[in-house]
Figure (spheres, rainbow, N blue to C red):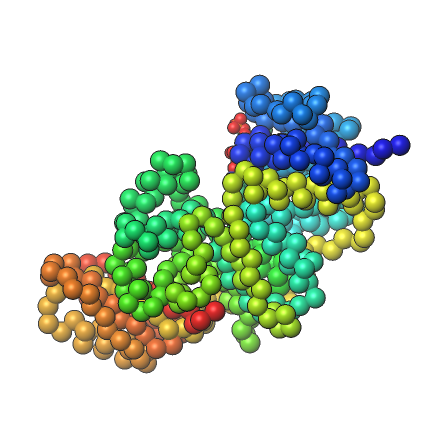
Amino acid sequence: MVQQVNVGIVGLGNIGTGTMTILAENAAQIDLKLGFPLRVKAVCDLLIDTKPVPDALGPVFKTKDWRELVNHPEVDIVVELVGGTTVAADVINSAIAAKKSVVTANKELMALCGAEIWERAIAAGTNIAMEASVAGGIPIHAVLREGISGDRVVALYGILNGTSNYILTEMEMHGAALETVLAEAQRLGYAEANPSADIDGFDARSKLAILSALAFGEKITPSDIFTEGIRRISQTDFQYAQRLGQTIRLLCAARQTPEGLILSVRPAMIPSTTILASVKSSYNAVWVKGVYGEDTFYYGRGAGPRPTGVAVVSDLMRVGREILRGSPLRVSPFAHERLGEYNPIPVTRQKRAYYLRFRVTDRPGIISALAGILAAKHISLDAVLQLPCDNKRDLPFAITLEPTTEEAVRQAVEGMSQLDFLLEPPLALPMEPPL
Ligand SMILES: NC(=O)c1ccc[n+]([C@@H]2O[C@H](COP(=O)([O-])OP(=O)(O)OC[C@H]3O[C@@H](n4cnc5c(N)ncnc54)[C@H](OP(=O)(O)O)[C@@H]3O)[C@@H](O)[C@H]2O)c1
């Protein structure tokens, strides 16, 4: 008898549609690779009557009510592609309670309560797969859980938000202002009407929480991660970056230090020669450093129906294979309690060189006032940079600092913010050493 595994998909938006397309168009290949077919048995969406389902999928049960799909007796795997943390959590928890495996693309939910969901799934003897939740088309979960799982990760860097990377690289390449690029990205549908999750770093933070949990086997939550978005980055910063042989990226970083793990999502100066600087437009990348295997680098599309759909379908194939062929004892990727070694510690303990950018009303004595505050915090000034500017009422310039702690820089910036010649608080960006 030919066995098959049946799939039910909840949420036929961008990723649901991409997933159905791949399952329909690539069915023969998938069947050959698996040795059995994956069948879409049921689909669910609030506006189900308006959502086209490919004819090649054959007869499919359609419903507006996700409970009908989850409880459908022939559905073996529930695919959650609704997003958010409310309905999606109900769908996933109900599927686990019904002893069905789950495939999800939901970074927000898995970052927030992935550990609990995994524990429930393991107790119920079902499987969870979440490759699509981070970096769309890059199979980074498989890399961390299988490909390099024999290594001991010491650092992980990522460019994990396509929208902010698109904005920054457009600013870098075309000299445009952030607001102009953002408006254009919104017009083209690359950025949401409310872009906060992307440009304030929250989307990237969810992804880093998941990746660092996988890389370090630690229960990382979004609140462990210092997060700062790209709103304050200006064209001036790119001009100074270029002078310094650097560029600016929204860098997600998880680094092991002797005291613990430092986690951050923030705009940072990175050397133009580093491979991360060549990650442009909406592409994503992850760089992992291990004790034994040293550096490995992964690059690809971070989003979009087709790349993300590939991740969902590949998860379905793996989970389907485990359902039919039996699966080994499962261990949660958020496995350990706090181990100490990878215990998150505040980013203020990080030591880096820094770039400080000022906008001032010009007058004598500005540099000495700033230098005095730096000296009081035992911070050594590296260089002062000033590009030509005629507007003495709004004059930008930059100072670079020798490596110092983030804590000292924050105190200095706070002290400087009181100075009356400043038009806004100084912008401080860490300058990453060559990665
Ligand atoms: N977009 C990407 O490139 C990307 C990449 C990686 C991961 N993801 C993740 O993938 C997931 C889906 O994202 P998406 O871009 O496909 O979102 P989307 O286009 O907004 O699709 C979500 C779908 O869920 C449906 N839905 C909402 N509430 C529902 C309910 N109660 N019952 C049934 N269906 C419901 C919506 O229906 P209506 O529209 O009919 O209301 C919509 O069709 C999210 O977790 C997202 O973070 C997305």
